[in-house]
Image (cartoon, rainbow, N blue to C red; front, side, top):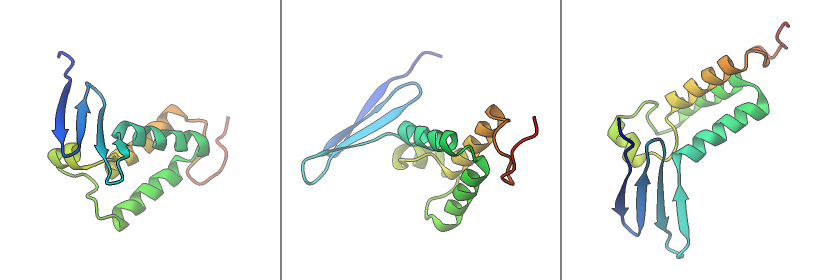
Length: 116
């Protein structure tokens, strides 16, 4: 499949999309530019996992988000693409699982050090 790029005008801003990332920039009422990128939010979650080495705590936090947030844990694709600025709760939980698979020597879910 060929790489797909695109753009869309938004009120006082622009949305750009590439093969694997998207970004929205809009002018705030004070004239400053606000930039939102879902990729940056995903990267922040991954960096937090790297820093804490505690995927169980991350998963617990994201599961708590699902009970306290007004956002749907797994919204329809159209809503996710056009309305959401962060990864979905389900994507974030999947990220904690992926981090755990890539880092099997990190602390276990109960906080004990893994056996060598």
